[in-house]
Length: 298
Image 1: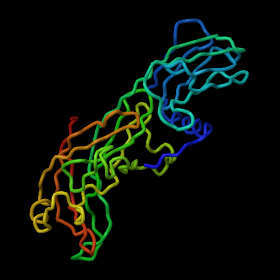
Image 2: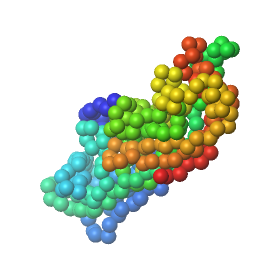
Image 3: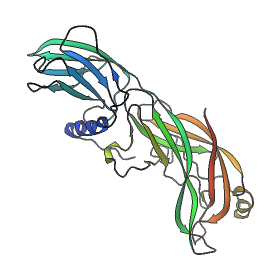
Image 4: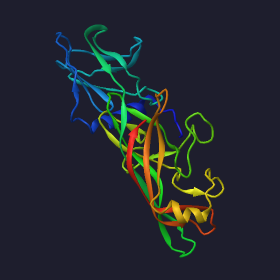
């Protein structure tokens, strides 16, 4: 994947967009101590700090577990709410989990302080096969539909945004992708967010808190390529067996930017329909249909 460094202004603008659409089910963190801070609410990719009055503070600081400021927001007279992004200024990476705090100041004196515990977790909650229509069936010279990639739906079950780094099928598929860090395409395995046309490019790899987001492999992992077939299945055998109801168990690897190791899932795929020569020069083949029959965490 291509990573770009963004300005602080771009980071804050992006975070505002991520947080604006998920107010339902937010988590209030209001404390019992009298202070300038009335409550703090967790949202998709932001914290919203509500002050007790418009003149309660002149600045709000967001402090990380190491005691260093993540960001500081100056407050205009009469302002009672402040949004704090849950991404790092400068590189647009999600914050790590841990114990943070919000400190309100008035004329450089602390007038309120509240702890904020941020958790990080996510899981796969669904998967399916993605079909494409491309190329030409060699025997009919018509456009054909074929099983191409695997889609997964990921749910963010924590507080901080998840940025997807890797999605690949490493075993049990016609065209496996190397695991992260194992060479080949492993460090840059391509994936795409489905239905992403209306989503800003800088947000497409993100899963906000509470969100369910579908991604798919973008490597044609369910297609047999003649020049690189790892299983060396002859075309005649493929036509006779593989696309005639055969079931195979694939291994999916999913890795977020801050994961030390990827999550692993076992996915059972059933291939069906006729076998298709996907292009006229006979370099790759695919099944007309495929479906996921079950999946489980490994």
